[in-house]
Each structure stands twice: as C-alpha cells, then as structure tokens.
Image (cartoon, rainbow, N blue to C red; front, side, top):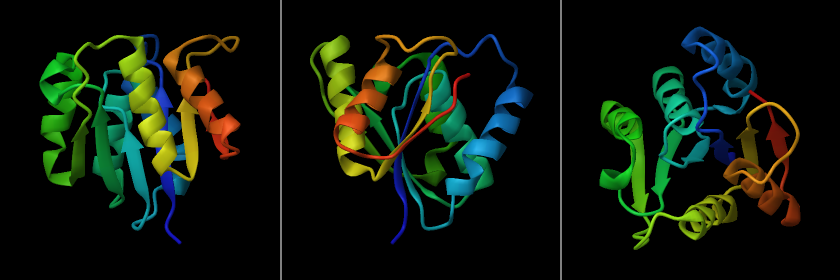
Length: 152
C-alpha cells in the first residue's frame, strides 16, 4: 500500500540556507518519497514551498497542494513555487475559505491529516508551541497517526 503523508512546517525558514534544507530533506523526506507515495502539502511559504520544490525535483511522488482559500491568495513565494512545479502537481485543492484566518488554516490542516496515513512535521526549533505546525502534529496524534517531527 503506497504511503500517503501530510507535510506541515514553519513559514519562518530564513534562518537557514537552501543547502541546509536540501540536506535536511535528503535525510528526512527522501526515505518516504517512493514513486508511489502521495504527499499533501499546504501551499504556503516556508516549509510548504521548500518541500514542494524539493519533492518536485527529487522524486516522482504524487503531490497535492491544499490551500485554505485560493492559490491567488497565497504569498508570492508560494504562488511562484506552485507555478514552477505545476507539471509535477497532481492536484490543487482550493478550500474556498472566505477569510484567511486561523480557523481556515486549521481546516486546511485537518483536511490534509484526514487523508494521510502519517504527518511529516518541520516545526521551528524550540519548545512545542501553539503554531499551526504544532496544531497539525497534535491533530494527527489525537487520531493515532504516526508523526515524524524534525525541528528546523
């Protein structure tokens, strides 16, 4: 049975360079990125965009992007990553939220976790907090789904 995983992570990635993230993904994302794997990615800037670009360039895994509203509402960095990888994205899900506030992001996160067998989380280093990344990891834990947590 092919792996289906949701990816969640911090939007704050400016404290590391792209080489560091490439090495990180080679170590912690590549082992899961089989040709028949399927990844749900949130379509935001930061980890979402970086994992999208990495998976599109280093795997044949199926990629689904999920946004709380529309792609047009996403930050420029995220829109550019989506456009750059358009030929590798199997599906884009626009949940159509009227307002891009915390409830819309939590709904997007639940949508991805509900369809996944596991969550790969890349939270900002430090103690657990109330971020969307930790909310997503906690939601997966409440469902008894495996979580790989790699602080960045």
